[in-house]
Image 1 (cartoon, rainbow, N blue to C red):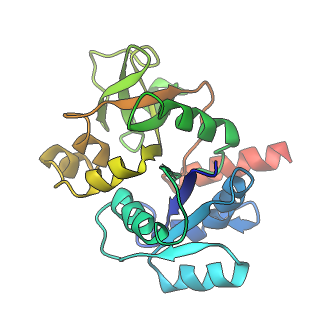
Image 2: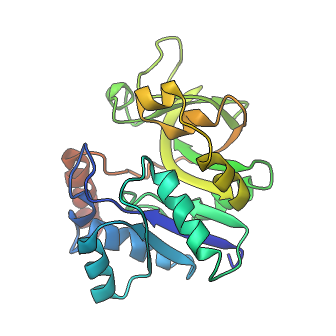
Length: 239
């Protein structure tokens, strides 16, 4: 992993779940819990942050971070700025973007993503939906997969013509990029559909293929307070 940096974008003023990075998972704020999980995988790990409160916490807890512009429109833009800053510090070829609300991310997932970069300029994860109700939830992003290998579409709305866990799966927002591809991507203007659905990956699929690593287990991202309760119940159960 010496040729790879892992960056976790963190922003307090999220629309759907304000102050989410400091919501507790176990005994740690979510941002610290996820950071700790990834720190077991690689030392080339940085939080891309924009809030003074987060900066102070990182300094207190000795977490590596890069300050970024608070006005970025997307996590990828924040990651891109962090990458440009890191180029002056370390040499790397690949970038992995781990969301700060993915408490069950592990080494296996990271390795699968990086392996996919042998075929694609960008890769992401997907898993089966746990239920039809979950698939209908607009906070759970759907990905349509072609040839069990790459994405042909992403949406928040379930297409009735598609069968869940056969050709449409639960998208997990963890990405791996060739560094230059990421920098080229963030220089492009957002598409209208991207703005409408708030899915920045829609900026890519018209011109490039996004590799998909399909995993069996659900990573359980925290999009809502109900998700947070579910994650904490699972952690308590497994202690």
